[in-house]
Image (cartoon, rainbow, N blue to C red; front, side, top):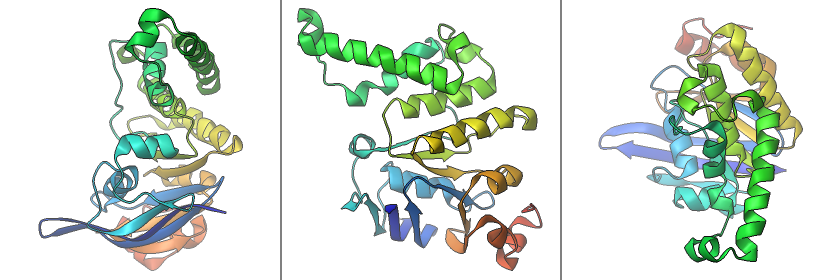
Length: 254
């Protein structure tokens, strides 16, 4: 079953075509990798899917529903959450508080609920606490639970950013360079985490430059260059494509 379908997605910035008539589908429960050199339009594509910016033309269909141009918070509630190239964390707050903030869109507790200790307030507090413990264990961050986010290693911050996204109970998780700034030795932890996410039935769309990681993890690859899709298919087929090899100048290796 197709979970996400992108039809003719285009975004213009003045006279610049950042994304040009891009089409692809993401089957439920699979991992799709988006690759391409710097400036290829990868992050802009994620911004269009996630609602950060509206498309100039084209459609985003999620679970059979047209979500084109929706606000980011509505898209997140619908089941698409994401991370960013730069980890968007509250660095002075403990990890567990960052996770609680990531749960806010799934709760309805308001000021009066908290003040009056309503049943909804008590129930959602209990549910959020249980979810925090679940995500801390799932991401392997339990040892850092009370540490300020800005004080833990970069690789742990990357896992925390993924954990914050998981707090929203996504059906589709968009990961923008989840191993950026992380050494090859530490990358294995993030690869293992993404694999566990897939094993839970969550669909993943990932932007990544580390091709050895993509080759071992992705079910399919979409390659972009100058905002245009230049290849799509199984990992080895895409990496053998002459247009991809030219775009990467030989970086795309098994």
